[in-house]
Length: 113
Length: 112
Image 1 (tube, rainbow over the protein chains, first blue to last red):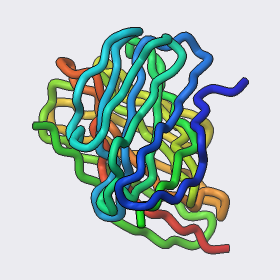
Image 2: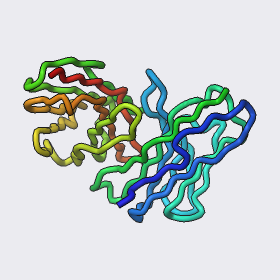
Image 3: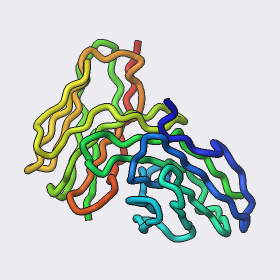
Image 4: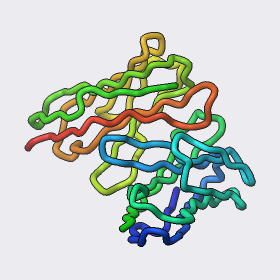
């Protein structure tokens, strides 16, 4: 009963390095989301996907790219990390019927130095 | 643009008290509203989901109400326990969007 799994859980990057965060869900959900959570800012949507092969920008997309090649996976990429991207990143998934709750992963704590 | 606020920002109560957390949203065109719980360093756990056509939902000691026309929701916690200590977030899903807009949360401490 995994739900939403994020990999890795922690990471420290140097400015300019790149990395990919992986989100996997086993609930056959169509919708997937990437949020970042910062003190005093709450959770803000970075990118989202309404189905395999589709992606769309959220509130704070700059500096990030995403891909949804498989329905169960949603990848978040940072091409050139900046200290401003230090944050906790959460992935979520939900059903398009909107009649059931959204499920969140445990988060990835990223520090860019 | 939908904006969600939560009052109070923090709350400290003795064990056994009943308490109310408040959530307000600016655009009443919502599809549903969810209350989440977040423990320190952890992810979000969904507590209650209220569809826009519903007035309230209950789960154990938790009761959430929704007044869509006035843009308000409340989360009522009965007989609070130290294990209820966490941050409580509300989030709304708009009719026309495919994402959740979150409030900043209420940090609850229940003292033994």
